[in-house]
Image 1 (tube, one colour):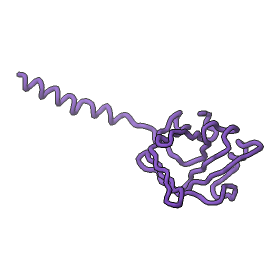
Image 2 (spheres, one colour; image 1 turned 60 degrees about the vertical axis):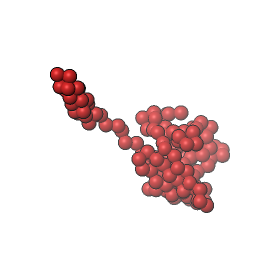
Image 3 (cartoon, rainbow, N blue to C red; image 1 turned 180 degrees about the vertical axis):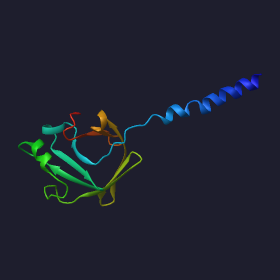
Length: 133
């Protein structure tokens, strides 16, 4: 009788929970897009645009940074010279910073995908115009 009870309990835990977990799906967020460093616009003066495996960096030192950032497009010539190749797989972002330097960090999306937290350096980027700052 004791064996039957243990066996039944194991069956419930083995098969009973899987059906419920299969119905739960997490949103798939992407790093692709325009991101500003913490502080947002206008306080933040740096924007990163991630597109098709290339990270572009833009700076704004005066004026309406939000309008400027909204108008910038990948490879439009307004970014600082040079770009950084990147990959994003299994919630790990790898950015080639050149000269044998890489940023490799697990990232976590928050605020419905409007904030991305970089675990290794310990800072966040905010998706441009997401309202998550």
